[in-house]
Length: 92
View (cartoon, rainbow, N blue to C red):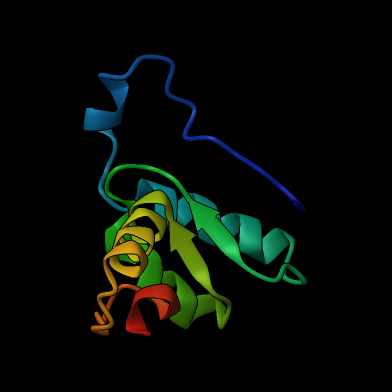
């Protein structure tokens, strides 16, 4: 791990007030500071919507807790259907 940064919200209700793209912006900024990283992990309930955009911008695999969880469930159930638009992990 090269770097970690939170969204600087002290209460759960504060996440609702953040713009949808907040985790994407933090991840992109960290990548600019640490471009030698192998991959990016973003964790926030709306972050799944930005995994593909983050991969496109950085040319690195981007994961969110949601994409990782969905991939695990699909693997356990033997589902091998690519889901485009949500990063390399779900594309297959």
